[in-house]
Amino acid sequence: MSTARTEELAKRNFYDELIRIRDQQRKDKETALFVVKGKEIPWELNPQGIMRWYMHPEIDDTATKNLIFFVQQIPPGSCSGLLKFQGGQVIHIIEGKGHTVIDGVKIHWEGGDVLQLPLRKDGVVFQHFNDDPHNPVELMAAEANLVHCVGVDRGCGFEQLASCPEYKAMQKEAKESSK
Image (cartoon, rainbow, N blue to C red; front, side):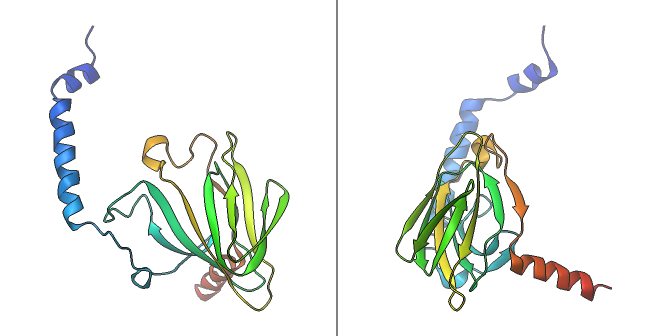
């Protein structure tokens, strides 16, 4: 018994489509960025914090797309948002001092340290805190880009549980100015 899907698939030559994809990837590499310059990347304020995205599933002009890579700033005495996701992220603390709470466990760090968020089947819940009331924290993070393979949820969910204070303030200000 033939289904509509079977009939549609039979109209295509998947080997030829693989060759077409290969050729397009080769063409894309000719103009791809091999150096991503930080000064050309804007900062963004989102529920997780103040971030600059170097590699992201929706940035398609880089030579490789196998990583998600960003830099994050946390203002003096502030914190990131509270996030639940699968984990597997490696974070280098560029400057500052603070701590991260991972599934209720407090882990202290300072500039020069590397923090590893564990990869767990049911995910991890984490939040970064800047313990210095006078100086910002800057960190950079990298993780495998599996978004198009297994989805953003990666089997355990991707949930913003709380927003960072700066984002909350921006939302409040926008709400008040629209009145």
